[in-house]
Length: 489
Ligand SMILES: NC(=O)C1=CN([C@@H]2O[C@H](COP(=O)(O)OP(=O)(O)OC[C@H]3O[C@@H](n4cnc5c(N)ncnc54)[C@H](OP(=O)(O)O)[C@@H]3O)[C@@H](O)[C@H]2O)C=CC1
Ligand SMILES: O=C1O[C@H](COP(=O)(O)O)[C@@H](O)[C@H](O)[C@H]1O
Image (cartoon, rainbow, N blue to C red; front, side, top):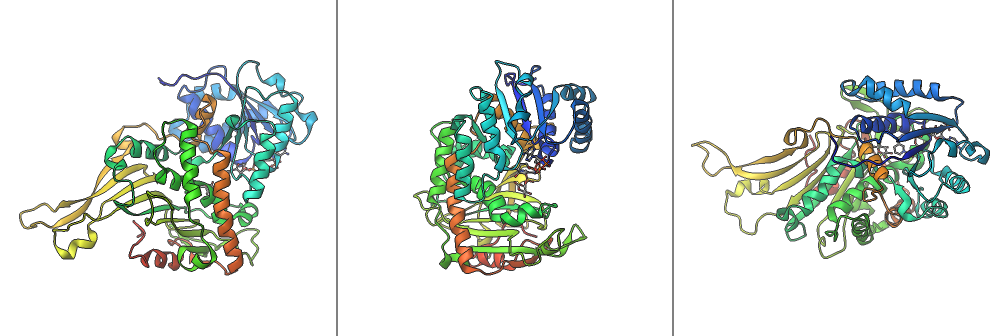
């Protein structure tokens, strides 16, 4: 039985028939229901532009849950209960008259969660109409990423919403913050003095953050070609991971204490100016190659592709944080589509001890690493040096893991999807896993100057074959510092 006290709420899901809602949000809500984390009085209103009614919605939801929930997690009784909570209202989010029937579907006296699974261009319209219906005071609004495509446009989106809702009612999603291991990073750092005492430039030589995807752009050329990997992944997910890794200990676990510390990291990130492009950044674009032995097309051969596109599908960066804790410690970030493996991990490389007493030829293997794996196989492992066993081995060292695999260690039945955690937190009114306006803006400010450097430089991204670890230049970037990307095969 859950130890969390669940309160009833109404959930209005704008864009309820879109990809995100059907693939992620409804399955996540179903899982919350299955776990006993949706109050019996919680109701869901699905809002979309298509003609339809409750029966058509229910049919659609059954099909989606069948497709997107693991077969052994499909419980017919829970599916029936979950579906009976959902009703449908057809509307164009820009048209005032289409909202008229909405209040009748929302019981008075319980909070409303309005989830915007729509393009950001309609967030302002929806807020205006909710205000017109006086559905403001007890409402939390959930904004999907991307919030704009630059500092200026993100401000426009934020201002459109802020006209009607205060910051403490706005929940900006970065789904990486809902991943179990990402939350564990906070526990790992601040509940273990072993790590917190060593978490600085005196003991850490460098940090790697890799978010590699096997998928390409999944039919989203129109969106992706305007965005590129820097806006799509670095501006949000990678910078959030960097912030949680690098931030100072917050004074408590409140949303604002954590967010205050994250903003300080973003503000301390050294800009990547045009003179650093050759050494601190690699932009790549995938060419045809193979993934899991199957041929896949290059980015420029994807459906609807513009053959002249110079949009990057890969970025690696050498970042520096200008503060007392991290001065002189590079943070190497990389992310790309169509890479060899789906792999998201943070690797903390500790420095060697000050006096070395073992065989000289083993010296370069001797360094401790803390590997925080987000996906696949969520877990944390600490690479330590031990003596090789056996009478014939002498004091021969070997590097091996001290492992904490979440699924083994806690016999967890399943690791919840990020959206389950995030939806639960919104329904409970907790903001600590959501991104504050000033964080979004600080991240855009940093990305905007890099985009400006790229524009000034004008060179094309480097090609890499699909199924590789990105352009060779990305390996060269880290090798120049006498290091290598951890775990590349
Ligand atoms: N899909 C994903 O995995 C992810 C999505 N996101 C974000 O989530 C949001 C939704 O994405 P996604 O589900 O992929 O997009 P989709 O285009 O699949 O869904 C958006 C839905 O909103 C509807 N819509 C748009 N404008 C209106 C309007 N004026 N009135 C009524 N309905 C409208 C669309 O209807 P119609 O089809 O008729 O235009 C569509 O059904 C976006 O902000 C996206 O950036 C973020 C991370 C991942
Ligand atoms: O936000 C996004 O994230 C996905 C990757 O998410 P993950 O949880 O599967 O790692 C990415 O594919 C998409 O392009 C981006 O918009």
